[in-house]
Length: 299
Image 1 (tube, rainbow, N blue to C red):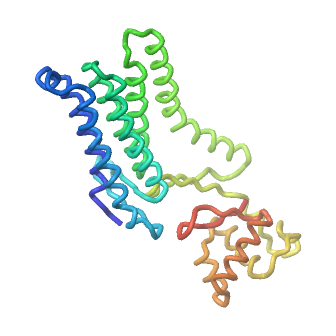
Image 2 (image 1 turned 90 degrees about the horizontal axis):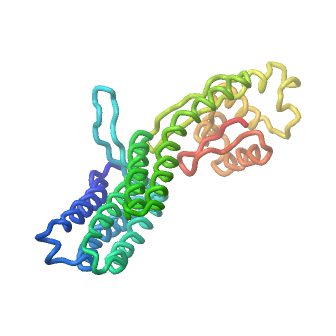
Image 3 (image 1 turned 45 degrees about the horizontal axis):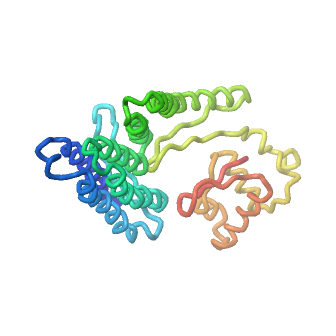
């Protein structure tokens, strides 16, 4: 279900960062101390928390809210936001715990009216974290992940005259920033190399609405033989319906409950579930996904 309002929490935390930076303006700094500013600014992440709470009924039945913005139309690239029950849990933690942290920071830096920098960095970090948790595609996730690297660097190095703080900040930036770039591409190369070494087909990489899917193919020709006695799974305790499902898997690569039902229309939904669960327990197939997104692949 599309919901353009998903952009609101990102706007709220980003506006909070700008507002915190404005507290460094002398005209504001003289009239508003850091403790008072922290209480006012904490209302914005609190509003984001309330927003996420208000969207819980819309995803209660397992659906998700999405929103897409054309980023590079000529390349077919879009920035996607995705809000489901899992992301809701962590978004409520980020904004719910983040709100009292902002208030606490105002008391921690009481009397230090230059601490507006720390609050601005905190809100930028919160914006990046909200973006990571709402990201609906790999590119959006990567952009916000690298934003967390930069903002965590600024937070750790807040005391710029402290050598230990500067050293720790550079370590953090190297590990989170460099590690994110390395893992984005290196893992794919390792998967391709491992499949080639095993004499298997290259993995199939697909960008999905809610993320990224990798399909690994086994040797289907070794699994199913024209002669039943020579089938690799002939020693398994499989009934004819399960053998039909395995043959389908060997040919297509995946099978869902609906596809199994089409193969065996005489079976009830509960029987189909039991047949697939039995093959999972035997270690022949593996369950992937959850609820309506569930499918099975050969081990």
